[in-house]
Image 1 (cartoon, rainbow, N blue to C red):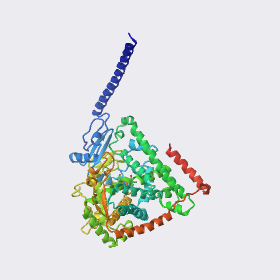
Image 2 (image 1 turned 60 degrees about the vertical axis):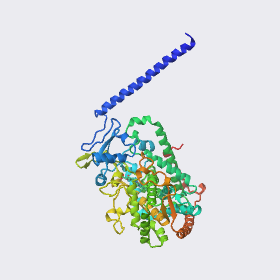
Image 3 (image 1 turned 120 degrees about the vertical axis):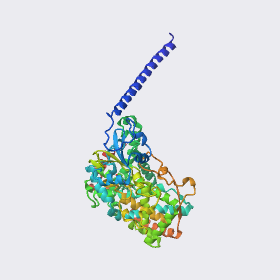
Image 4 (image 1 turned 135 degrees about the vertical axis):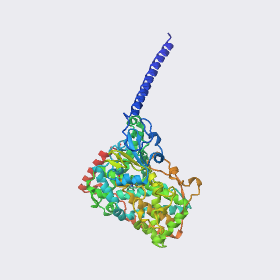
Length: 592
Ligand code: HEM
């Protein structure tokens, strides 16, 4: 046999043996899969169902996962009309209950609030993203640490605390609108994208409340602001309820290393800016200059670190808990408030009448001098019509169409069925907010549905009127802040501009939140890019406001002038504190 044919023969033999090995592995996998399916169909590996609640269609092993990957809330609405307003579904190894009507949500979330008060842990979010076990307050399961963080945050975000810091909202809403004036006056531009603008606003406000950090998103702060918005936005993808299959099928965790890498990169990027801000505040607090300390003394971190005595339990928080609270402040409203506000302005660009009534009602509350209205709206929230527009935006848009998931900590008795402790529950807030039994012409944008004939808020509308902030014991802690931010920004937009459709028909906002959504697999509705026309109503008013703004800005710059303190000037106590906190951060962050 020639050398060549010898090599060929060996090659064929080796090849055949590899083929056989592959075939045997594939065969083994197939047999195992069949065996697994058989066990599953016999109910041996499938999770136990809850007796007495309708169970929706599902596949072996996967359950309903393939059916609810995109726009799950619409599938739930479809199933609710077939099987009943509350049903159970199987997601991989879990059973989940879904509530789909105004009444059933009230019953399961409000009436049974004490039993329905924890959060389930998910692999993607709690293990991959938050390896250091620092997650937001809203995703922390019910526990001692949750109660400590919640108590501190509730105190910081209650009506009284926010009322005391209305000046921040006042200034930052002006900081949002004045650049639009300037751009409009200088370049004659009318068409603007409001989404990023409102995200910058929410971020700046959160940074001041949390760290006493003033960010100029027009200039040097923009790059960092974009980084934060992008990271937080990518993280909402990781938090999606039903599109991360590895959360429900542990076997898939072995098969998705790429996802793990992406998630750990997000975690590191997030850690970097959290540390930067925390360091900023800490440095300012030990500064000898009164001005430097004054700039940060009212913020949350200052309260925790003890320079400001106000607030309960603040000294009991450890570093992980402080980080969790700060993270919550930064991330919880960023997309939610920004997306809602952008949607609201997009709606108004379609509806001139709402703007005309809005302006009339603002004048009715504050008099014809609109400068007065501009200067006061952040402090007194007097105009019910504007409140109704904000409420209708929250209801109609329902930025989290399926609210944050819950886990029961006690048994719940629901219409003859026992829902055991440890069950995961989804609130279909989209369905609750569009329940035709409660909201007539439910898919239309009608602020008047919350008002009486005199355009005053209906008494029944002072309380829980929609589920966009959730409901019950774990309802959104930042709802008052978010509402006030949206109210003030909206008042000022209506005072300043006539809001029209943009010149480019391609950029007109789609009014249906479902069609407008660019990421049907994510936890939140995220509007596709759109523009609105913003035409200045009254140039004289704008000039007066700009004048006032320039002097306010000068005042602010004086108050918060940044001056770096030299290490050599620090007292030994200040240095010791620095080292102690730095050590903790190093241990926590493991920076590359
Ligand atoms: C329009 C803006 C916002 C919307 C639509 C929104 C919506 C929600 C929803 C649906 C929940 C889950 C509630 C539940 O399980 O019943 C939640 C929880 C929470 N939100 Fe918001 N949120 C907004 C803004 C904010 C802001 C600005 C903050 C703080 C700065 C905040 C802080 C929280 C916290 C701490 C929780 C967790 C509450 C807990 O688990 O005890 N939210 N939010």
